[in-house]
Length: 392
Image (cartoon, rainbow, N blue to C red; front, side):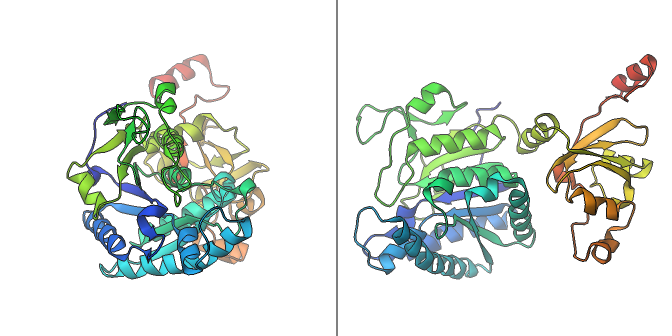
């Protein structure tokens, strides 16, 4: 674990969370000049080859301004109506601002189940990855028009952390109306000390979290620390910084005050560990020698290389991948239900649509969802097991 702060430009994929108060003014509505400034920051990152995702709050705040709703707490149906109106305006604003640098925006509205239920998780991730692949910037928000208190995140700090882990981002930036973590809420304690680098989120760090700082923001420091636990635990670094000034990302790069939370590992390592060790295989895929060799060189598992299938699994379940000699060589998240997987076993990816009736995924198990486990052969002789261990 490294406590070293890194430049934004040293990262591959960055998730940026933006608080409501940064985007929306209670009286005047959308802060257009601020939005244009951060979009210019995003364009600069993309020009350096960095993939950027935005988790944007502000739909309810924007909607209640457009609808001229009174201040104070809203009823559930009022919040949902405000979100319905505000989300349209917000998406349009992001699209127009990013287009000034020839960047396409794509809107994605998520609910709690989209990141917690495996099938929906895989669908959401596939959509986001495709947007990034074609150079677009996903603009993500919780779907407040349908979410209720029982099935919602309730704040975009934790949603942003889930998006970061889901997409394998290596940095999460939380922009709000506070510039980082203090030993106590600075607006209540004048002796509160600022923390520049947080190597690990300990119980002492959690105790420092305060409450929300503004009416428009549902999340306070508590939710940011929760987000940090999610992100850093999956190998994603996190920054808490103020977004009150124009060009906040450029300001971070130039050394403005912010708090850096060190990752516990790497996104790939953390995710592979989760696949390999924490899930019980729901089935088995038996490979030919060619497919086994392809996996060893870092490629995805295609249907053509699968000889037979055992088990009754569903898309997104973990399956054990068995080599030509009958021993487990990998585990991964399968892209098809067992019945469909059996239909395309041994067939070319180009035949999938004709067999299943729809254009499925080319890989039975994509390399991003696969980890080599290197288990010794089951039932092998003692000397064979020693040989296997020597080459593990």
